[in-house]
Structure formats: structure tokens, C-alpha cells
Length: 104
Image 1 (tube, rainbow, N blue to C red):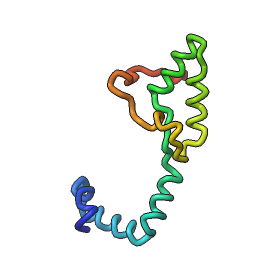
Image 2: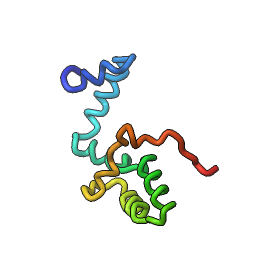
Image 3: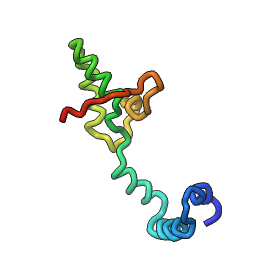
Image 4: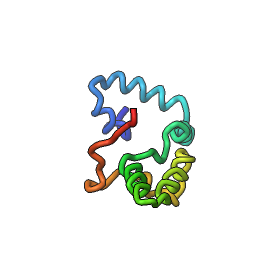
């Protein structure tokens, strides 16, 4: 398990369990297949709090364009689309939303 997996292996308390998993993972499919499987179930974009809050605040002042853009960006969360790249990054420190309301 030396080589490329070694930095990840060091993160696990049970290195032997990691070795077993890594060997199985390596045998199951080639890298291209593994990536396509992961991309099929892991979205590129998620509704991040700072973007949702931005849309809400803009709506309070009657501006709904950011809401519609957010909805459009999230309508196909698994596909890469450079047009919506700003929805793929975490908030800058000044954009962090410290309090949210789930409505329940």
C-alpha cells in the first residue's frame, strides 16, 4: 500500500483495515469508473447557507434574480457547469452564516 495511498493511510487508526479496503477498491474498477461512480452520487453544487441567505435577503428587497439563479444552479447539481462555478465554493469569512432557521 505504499506510494500514492500512503498519505491517506496515515490518517487511519487501523492501517490494516485501510489496506484491505484499498486493495478491494483498487481491484473493483479502474480509476475512470471509480470517478464516474463517485460523481454520480456526489453533487458538484449544494445549497450553501451563504448563497441561500443572499437569495433571501435580496428577495426581501424585491429582487428575485439571485433566487432564480440559485434554483437554476441547483436543478442539475451533479453536472459540471462553469456558468454556476460561484455556487461550488465555500463562503469567505465575511460570508459565513452563523445562524439559520429551518422553519420547523
